[in-house]
Figure (cartoon, rainbow, N blue to C red):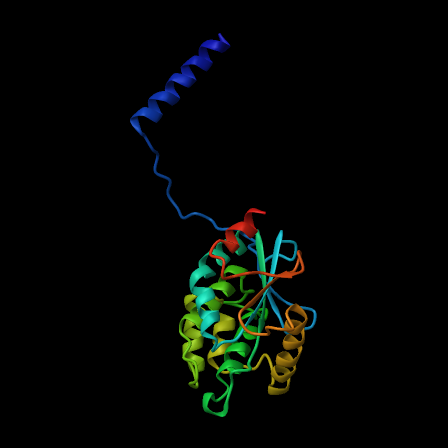
Length: 235
């Protein structure tokens, strides 16, 4: 008797498969209730987007006016966001500001400050909460896609629009729009000095940006190999 029921069930499943019947499901899909988020590094001059125990841990040294950094985000940013959201990758961003000049009016410093504001835990009420790793990554992508090297760069309101478009929570986006300071001028100077020291340890001969460092393997990655990310994620 049991085998007969099994045969009927299999036959029914074949009919459904062959006729392509589907059942509409109402409502909206639920996302991950606790997606990977952002966190400051212990030295406070880096921002980790993703899980602390993600199997792949990268450190990226980047400058808001660096065109090669923009190329990296254009080519790999979407995949960064995907792997971060899936819990497979964490990226610690270490901003640099060495391209700032009097003519740029602190372009790189203001963008770097906005990154730290976006990574600050939110307040209470609507729009509160922490920025997720994927949201932060998309914010980085938008900032570098809209850079204007050698100019004062986007104003606070425009940077806040980039944050909102990336999904950064309302509290942090509002803080960016009002010019809130996560880092003082002295803090940003210390950030530049500290992150340069780390970058020098990674590669004392070429301290340019972008530099991508594999924290687990302890080595600088060749990001000019088109398949570098695929190989890394598959390893």
